[in-house]
Length: 78
Image 1: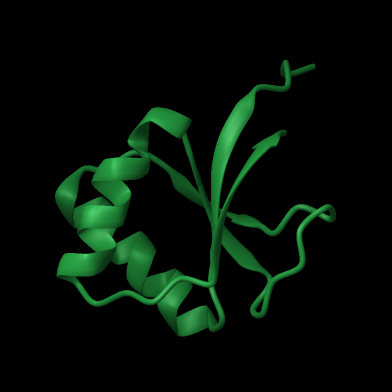
Image 2 (image 1 turned 90 degrees about the vertical axis):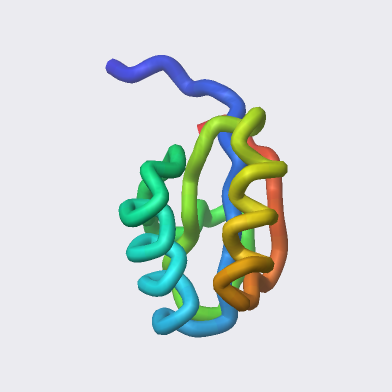
C-alpha cells in the first residue's frame, strides 16, 4: 500500500483547462500528474493536477504565463 502524503491539488472549472495544464507541465518538465478530484474536494470538471506542495510557486507561474485558469488550490493528504 502506498503511504499517504501531503499533496498540492489544483482544480479546474473545465476539462480543457486541466488538459492544458497537463500539456504545459509535460512541455516544461514540471512536477505532477492529472488525477480524479479527491472526494473531499468539490470541483467543476472532475480532474485535478496533483503535485508536491513545494511545486506551488513554479506551477502558479506556469499557469499565469500560459493563461491557464484554475478553480482552486488545496493541500490534502492523499
